[in-house]
Image (cartoon, rainbow, N blue to C red; front, side, top):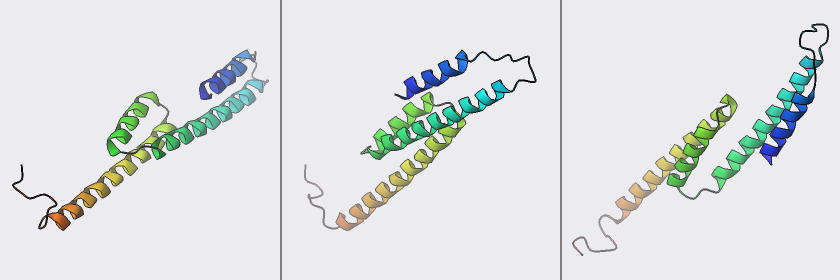
Length: 119
């Protein structure tokens, strides 16, 4: 869907036959601004896709795998910044999980559910 939208925007921009050497004609400038606006909209769609992808991940390991896959795909700085914010969230969740495990250990270390030397 997003790829089709990009191809359509690209073809539309390429189909315009502007005379780049005619400095009095500003049609190319207007077309270029319009093209950039379409690309900005595509970036927003991609960022929304990234956000949705990370909402449905159940484990930190899977979130890191997803991050690694996206990291190699997205080269635009605007998308990298959004992806970096996801990495911060992943590590904050990792810290919370470690704290939860530590609290569980402290709670059960004197009275474990299984005997200490039980095979």
